[in-house]
Amino acid sequence: MQPITYAYLETTNYCNLDCSFCNRKDVIGPLKHISLDNWAHVLKKIGHFPIKEAKLMGMGEPLLHPKFDQITEMFKETFPECFVIVATNCQYTISKGTMMRQVFERSVKNIDMLYLSIDGYEETYERDRAPAKWPRLIKFLEDLAGVDIGKCAIVVNYVVNKHNVYDIPKVEKLIEKYSLGELRINIAQIWDPSITLADDERTWGYDKEQLEFLKSNYQHAIKGRSKWEYNDCFWVKNGLYMTVDGDIKACCMNTAARPFGNIFEKSFDEIRSEDNYQNVRRGCLDNNPTKHCEHCSYKELAPLLDSLGIPSD
Image 1 (cartoon, rainbow, N blue to C red):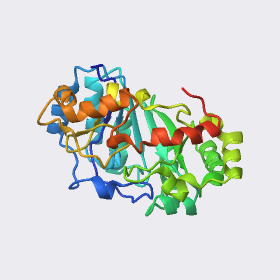
Image 2 (image 1 turned 60 degrees about the horizontal axis):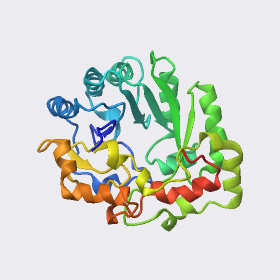
Image 3 (image 1 turned 90 degrees about the vertical axis):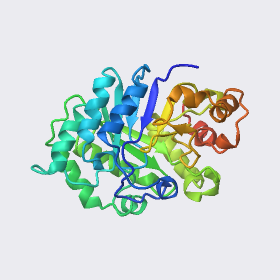
Image 4 (image 1 turned 120 degrees about the vertical axis):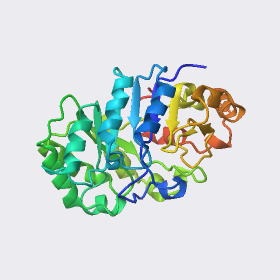
C-alpha cells in the first residue's frame, strides 16, 4: 500500500452552528475535545508517514477547542514541512484582550492556510449557517485585520447552492474590503450516503442562467474535477480520515459510514489492511464501487463541473 501523504484529522466535534448542508447531528457521538495526551498518541502513531498536507478540522469548529494553539503546535513539531489547513466559521469573538484572541493568534502561527467559511450574504448567510449572525462575522473580520497572521494565507471558502449564486459578487466586495485573499468556490455537496445530489433541489436545481453566471464569472474559482472516476480517489490510496474519537473512516465525503477501526486500538496500517477497508479500496481501484461509495459527491459532481468548464485535473 502507498504511504499516507494526506490527513484529515478532527480534534473537536463541538460546533456553534447548525449549517443546512451538514449532517453532524446524525453522525457525531458525545461532544468532546481531543485531549493533548490522546493527540500526542495519534501523532506518535502516524508520525512515520510522509504527510504533505493536512486539514485539522472535521464536524466541529476547530477553534472551539480550548487548546487548539497547542494542537497546531504539536502537529507542526511532528510534521514541520506539512502544509496545514484549517477552516473556521468566524462566529466567535477574537477581540483584543480575550482568551479566544490569544488562542487564535498562537494557532495561526502553525497554520499555512485558514479558510473563512462565508456562504452567502446577510440573509442567505444567516439562513444556511444558522444560528450565525452577519454582524458577528463582520466584527470577526474587523478584529482579524489587527491580528499578526504571519505567513498564514487567509482565503474565503464559499459553498454555492441554488439560493446563493448571486451573492458571490457581494462577498467579493467583502474580500476586497478586508483584504482576505483568494475566493474558493465549492459546489454544495450531500454528506448523507443514503441520498444523492439530485435528491435536493438546492444542490441540483440550478437554472441555465445561474450556471452561465457561474461559468462566465467564476470558472477560475470553482474547485473540483470535471472528469473523475472511482479509481481517481486519493483517499483509498494515500489518505487518512480520523474523527475526534479516533475512529478511522474512508474519507470526509461519507461521514455517516461505520468506522473501519480505531487508531487508539490499532495502527492505521493494521486497519487499512483488514477486509472491510480493502473491499472499499479495491472497489474504487477497479471502478466498481461498493455500496459505501455509490453516492460519492466527487462522482456525482463531475457532470455539473464539466458543464461549467472546470478542468479535469
